[in-house]
Length: 286
Image 1 (spheres, rainbow, N blue to C red):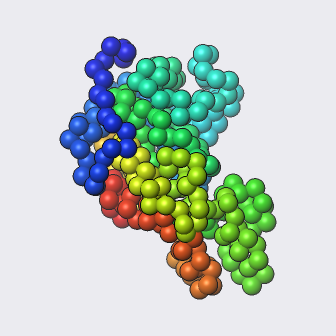
Image 2 (image 1 turned 90 degrees about the vertical axis):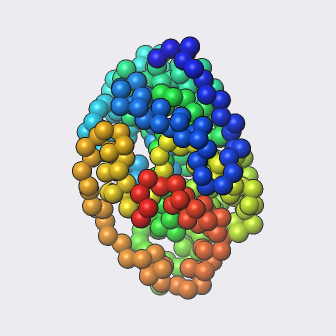
């Protein structure tokens, strides 16, 4: 596609309420149609432990994706003009021209790629409104994500099981760590300071909501199998239902400590509010 295509300028972070503006809706419809035609690139914004591996595995069945975890070259095919091994920061796709240049670089090689985020991603800079860019983001309940561990340097190596009488000190340390603090919210917020525990501001929460409104698709990991089927239906991909590989007890039962449970719900309250609100945008309402 040419850089001369009609641009649709959508003010960033100016949407209010949960209704999708008509202008934004038409952009998303155009993005979906362009993917069906083979010109749009599908990009997953992967917050660690938000189904990135499962989605990568599924999308590889429908076309080429980067060899290393759908993110990096890994010795596989790679555009020669792209950064060696990686795609560079998604935040640099920050204008119509830059997004178009990146999509035109990667689309001949891949139909799908992923960016993983552990800390603030500066994602508000991304030109999500480019008509040949389809974006997806899976979201997960913050306490379920907390129990999955994650790339928290100290605690990921120390904690090997659900809370029990032998690891309470480790879990309290993990619960109070900077790494665990409002994990998804801090990645999606409009500044790098949105991780202040229970005191994380309403402004941080609202900025993350504004960002989620700009994605083409929001998925709820609570019903990932059904969400992937629905995503496939929208994109003309025959994605079969896949049941979760693991079946966990409810998070409160796994925590098995009322004091820790209440602490996590209080400290992560903004992250939990964001997740619960995101269900209003999800392609499937679990």
